[in-house]
Image (cartoon, rainbow, N blue to C red):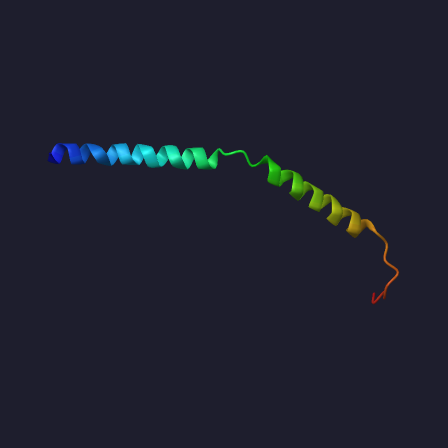
Length: 56
């Protein structure tokens, strides 16, 4: 019985590794599109010329 318990340790480790690898390899492309759109808006805002106060 003790030997079977020791065999459970590698089996549980393999199961945990499979869960971790499936979580890290998930498809996350939907977030990249939103981030790229936000970056494009940021660049457009930074390229605008503002006629506010020129402290320099």
